[in-house]
Picture 1 (cartoon, rainbow over the protein chains, first blue to last red):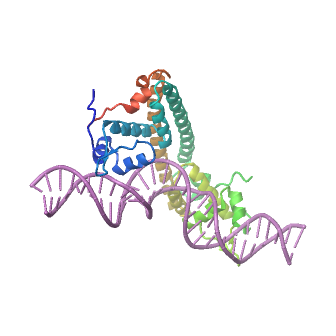
Picture 2 (picture 1 turned 60 degrees about the horizontal axis):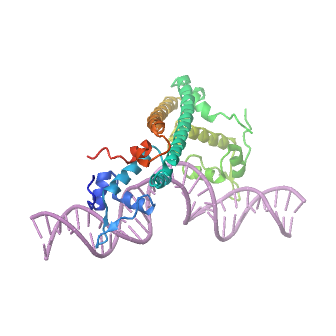
Picture 3 (picture 1 turned 135 degrees about the vertical axis):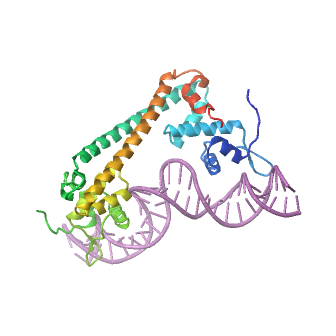
Length: 141
Length: 141
DNA sequence: CTTGACTCTAGACCTAGATCAAAGGTCTAG
DNA sequence: CTAGACCTTTGATCTAGGTCTAGAGTCAAG
C-alpha cells in the first residue's frame, strides 16, 4: 500500500509538509504530534505518517480551527466509529462560529460603507461624517 | 457649548469612556492620548476632551482599525481641511480589507459546509469526508 | 579529515493589546 | 485622624502561534 518505513529527518518532513522545523518541534511540545523515534545520535526519525499528520494540522488551521481544537480533532479521528459523530459536531460548531464572524464583519462593513458614501472627501473635518461618527458622543449613560 | 474645564481623575474618565484605567495609561504610552495635566500630587487631570478621544478610539476599534491606524486617524483628524481626504482614503482601505476578509471566510465556510453535508455523522472514520479532507495527501510536490 | 549542512536542547523573544502586581503616596467621608 | 478608595510608577504577565539564538553535536560528500 504505502512505503511502510521511510525514515526521514525533521528537515525532510518540514519540507514535505510545508512547515518550519521549529513549528514541528513546537507541535510536538504542544501534543499535536506524537514523539517520534530517535536515532542513536538523538536525531528525530519520522515516517510518512508524520507528514500526513502535519498536513492534517495545516488544513484544519486553514479552516480556522485553533491548535487546541485540532488536538481534539486528532484524538477523535483516532477513535474508530465513535469519533465521527463528534468530529461532525466540531465542524458544525466551527461553521457556526464562522457564520457569526461573517455576520459581524458584514455589519461593520455596511456601517463603514455608509460613512464613506456620505463623506465628500474634502472640506472641514467637522463636516466629515467619518470623523463625526467616531467623535460624536452619543451614549452618555 | 461645553463645560470648558471639568477636571477628572483617571478613574472618572475610565468610567465615562467605558475603558479600564490601565488601558488609558497604555494608550498614553502608545501615543494615542496626549499627556494630561497633573495635579500637584502627580494625579493625572483630564477634561471632556479626553473622554471624547477615548470614545473615538473605541469606535474606531469596533470598526476594525488597529491602534496604529487609529493613531494615524487622530493625527489626520487634527489637520483641518487637508485631513479629510486622507481620512476617507483610510476608511476605504479598511473597507477593502474587511471585504477581503469576508470573502476569505465565505470560501472557508462553503468548503466546510460541503464537508459537513457529505458526512453521515457515524460509521468508520475512513468514510468521514471531514477527516478524509483533512488527512488526504493531495499535493505531493 | 575537513567542510558545510543539518540537528539537538533550553530558553529568550516576537506581535497586539492589553492586564496585573507590588509597593507606596493621596484624597475624602465620617 | 483613620479607613478605605483611589492614584502613582516600574515592570511582569497573558494569549496564540510560533520564531530565533547560542552552543554543542552529527552527518554526508569530497
